[in-house]
Length: 121
Image 1: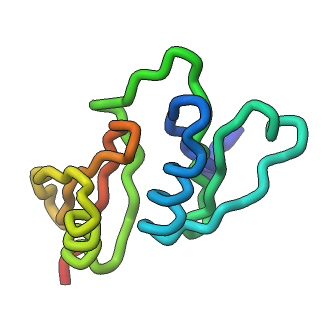
Image 2 (image 1 turned 180 degrees about the vertical axis):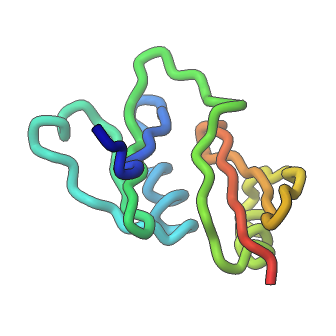
């Protein structure tokens, strides 16, 4: 048995907020929306592709944002991304740099914590 990698990460969202998810993950972050399978489409939510992976925004009945657990996105142009998010009114906070990485946190429209990281130089 071998785990080959991660296919997708799911973040939760409240019901009926697909437009806001599209605006944030699609329009602001530039992820590409992908069609959910027909058997899941009626459950709400929206799926995106980012690089070779997928991010699924799934509806959670008693939604509470994830404030500690988070997906981490590998980016190029970390400072530009942060400036873009701040200009759009997105809350960001410093992340302690790790050896070989610069990073910061931001919160999606539902309050879920996201990490953005870049290798310096």
